[in-house]
Length: 99
Image (cartoon, rainbow, N blue to C red):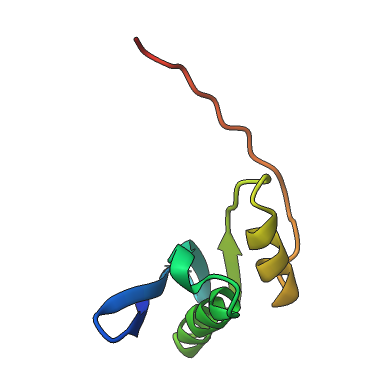
């Protein structure tokens, strides 16, 4: 439920994982992961799979959809902006490498 897979015969071409949460009468959706196999990039599949995920969420009564992306992922930013997402904040990530 909430996972959309695009296949080419037996091969996975793209995926979009969605979730939603209810807070009282307000339903918020999240796109938690989206990916397109390298062999299928450049064909518009990324945008199509995102739109499919958005459709699933709106069909469940979601009034807003949120997501997080790596700021260095220009292609993801481009796709999400092209379907109406706008930047609403920033998040810092910390990392400690262990030997």
